[in-house]
Image (tube, rainbow, N blue to C red):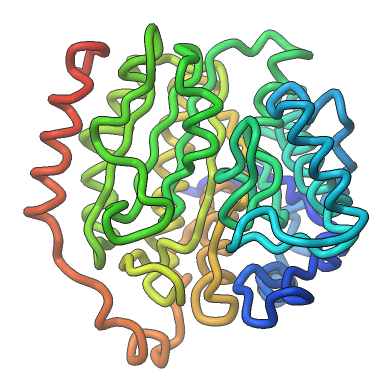
Length: 368
């Protein structure tokens, strides 16, 4: 049986290469090569010529769109910092002129959401930088200035009949900014799989963090130990993510695709392969087809293994969005030789974590 392909919109522009945190921090990992190497593999695989993807230009987010998510005082502080340069926090350099790229990043996410909601594409991937999921209502942090995925969600809510949104975040670092924005919102389901916060930035995202007030149970933190790999992530999808999303019945699924869960990433300690990232996207698409007509918008978050991991992970994600085979997406042997030691069998530990997560949220939601 021939599988029908679904064309994917890739939101990208060379404007994203202009963001240069290394001007203030020469060793900063959030570099333009993250996107250059991904675009190179898209060209090498001839995804555009083969009709698998269309590249769509982003636009800048405007102030009204930013202020749906962020405090005005915070946004004004970003505009002031943009003129002189400096730091948002010790990890987040802000060279002069940084805000233009940040607004194009948020605007790229908005375009991805618009294309999907309007039905022009069923799937869209905002291949953007800087990332966003650590930016909270009144702060930036962790390489992030504004919260791209939240700005996208609030934009489509304001323009279309979209009420309930599910966010799946598999970045190795807990998306504390996204959590804080939606901690009290029962109409936003936020599920995050991330490295155990006792071993990783930002030191949050423990199992007991389940939201506030009426939203308790709609924020699901799944911290996994270093080395956790593909099989354990699939366990989590099977036993937690899929049943929760079926219970929640979202109108739209948004994904924070942080590919720093890859086993070669230089600033994390997880063990996911490129194909594992693709499998997570494949499962997300399958879930979306059952609950919201297959509509998925993806926003790039982290991922700093610019040659060994990120481009392969992004390729697998794109192919999975298009519902194409990902079995041939394999990192070079030398990547496994150099970094394969980081991958571990954590199935017993992750089974215990899954049980604790279910116990924590069982008073608030129904799991089949």
